[in-house]
Image (cartoon, rainbow, N blue to C red; front, side, top):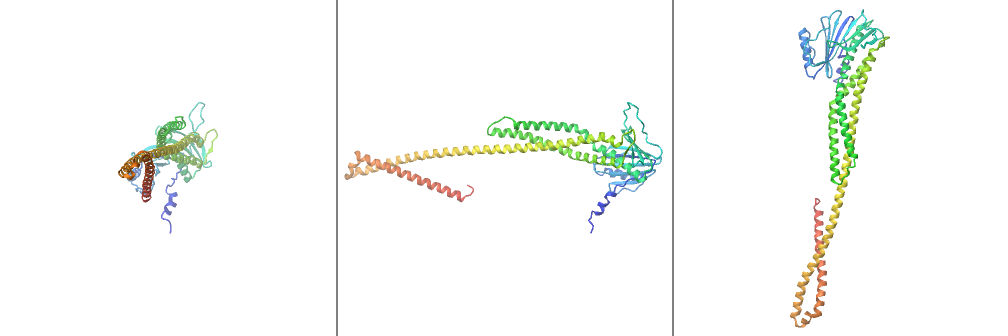
Length: 430
């Protein structure tokens, strides 16, 4: 069983046919960049209705039809649409009606003649007009252009047909159209590079300021270091946010420029240029201006990527420093808490000692009064309740009370601590 997409994928190479052409003829080609939607298709459908032609298939991205005196072709690309018209013999190319959606970004006109050579000439000294002249397709054609914009908005090309087949001439025209369209599309971001570079310079400065703060000698203690480095992290975070925004707004455009640039260089190779003595080839003419512009775009893209990586690296390093400083700060807090706990334990021991003395004193006073009263009330022991005998009895009572008080408080403390430990074992959240 075939895959459901097999037929569509195999037919993808056939969905954009090349128009055949014979000399003499004149061809126009325009690229309109638009926001998208059904605008281009609705326009083409209206044109077909006005011409009495069959409307195009809504699922297709191209349309080709014969018109009086020539051919027309419409193609929908990723972000632009192209409108091509060829007028055979002495007929002028079809004039597309007004109302095409979008704005014209590229437009060229190619005049093909079998008897009249292109209008190139040897330039006089001091003449600043530049022209490109080369033989193409193994010497079976001569191509000429100045790549300058005419008053009507077209860039003119001339082709001298010296034996090109209709299919080969159609491919030559298509290559010229693609070179003209994609060289403009590749450079559409170029005017914005100055603003992008200015923003990159600003972000470079922000990154340098943050790094200088990280390497500075503003050494402070405790929370001050953390607060200082968190302020530095805010600077890096804002820079990272700006870099991400800049990347989000330029990634597609930079990638598209690189892709369009490769198409242009590929199409220049495909027309198989050969040098005409005394003139520069179209590829030489274009590459001298086009390649440096592409290199500038690519250099800006790489600089943006490097800046994003540097900001991310600096942010990660600073976060690590903040985490380490917080750990050190927590360790200092724990050490301080341990010291306070030790002081509290010592104070508690002192209080316990005082408690033993106080309890012993009150117990001794009560017991001594009781013993003296008992001894004094009994005639046989009355002599013990006075003099040196009383003092010895009181001394013995004092020792006994002290020992008893100490043992009692120690037992109470042991029972309390034992109950607390049992409670902690019973409740794992304590």
